[in-house]
Image 1: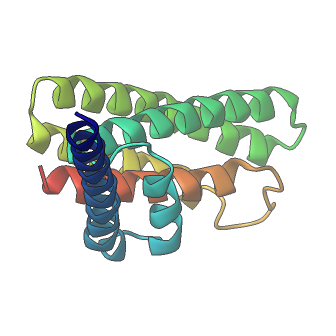
Image 2: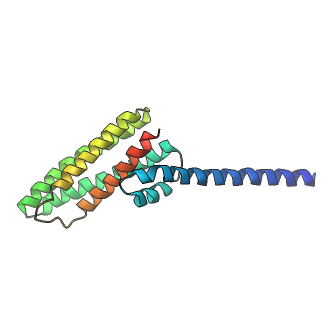
Image 3: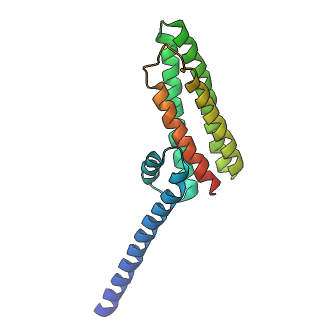
Length: 172
């Protein structure tokens, strides 16, 4: 009886160890497949490793949620900057960015709905639309006066997240 119990425990331990090793290998494989094709591979690697899943659809869900949070924070920031700046040029730029980020939030929410029904092509289309809006906002600041807020940095980060979404959803 003791031999059987010992064999069962060893077998269960082996299955557990195999499962852990498989999950780690799958995670490394997804990171090594996805991240080199994104706009910021080191950032991608950090994001995907923190996702808590190795499943491709789970990674898209995670990055869409991350993008939604970032876009909402950027929309709030753009609105706040528009309301507080006294420089008329910056006020116009922040207003334009607020409009862009409002559209971005809608695009990301649409991508989440598209993913839920398995329309991966639509996920790509609206994610690309979000990236275009990010570029529109970023482009507002090509000339002085300079923006010293976090809005442009947030836009760069959101663009990197969208890049991860595009590459990952193309693998689904």
